[in-house]
Image 1: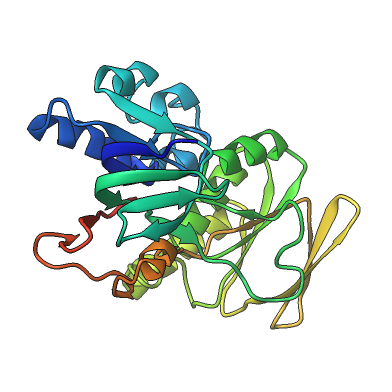
Image 2 (image 1 turned 180 degrees about the vertical axis):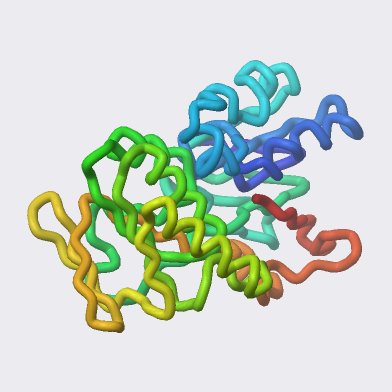
Length: 280
């Protein structure tokens, strides 16, 4: 198979990748563009996944950055469900998991972040939702019905928003997190304590200063054991403990990484024409 050549290759199908297509066309009307995304969906906004979608204030069709025809109209080829696994910076090529290669003149890494995962027994059991992506919402929403029980691990924004969304669907929610109150890394203590009290008033069981030590599954139920010695049974197990920068490709390409990709004032590695962009 002949190697395909593009003026611009964008790795990452989030908002940064979608916006890059539009941005490139403001400066280059004709250069060929390839947008590659691991997900099977075009770029979309993530905030509605824990907010408006749950409260019927928005439909799935409304969360996408641009309609399908936008990319064709801007002369961009889109490859979805495709994971780029290697960068040959010297040859200016990228390779996907199937071994196909794509030659670039300029490469934009817009890989965003990946959910933090727990490292404890049972953390990889089937059905546990490490919530971040549209497929996570599509899987969880039909199961979130009155009479079911859920354990939500994490007391930050994602955990709090999911606990509220599930409670509004009639699910009995238990939250577990090691901090003394909700959203403790952002909110001052008085505000965080007030929010925690509000959640409890709404029927959420909030277990502060605690953390899971193991997960198990029996039939359709999960069993969560905590550091404080509690055993929690649930139909749904959701983990929302933040994200990590997705720097694997940058590392493989020999770029400097820390808590993300280290870049200069031009956001580029000039010798290999590799650029980096943030994402939500």
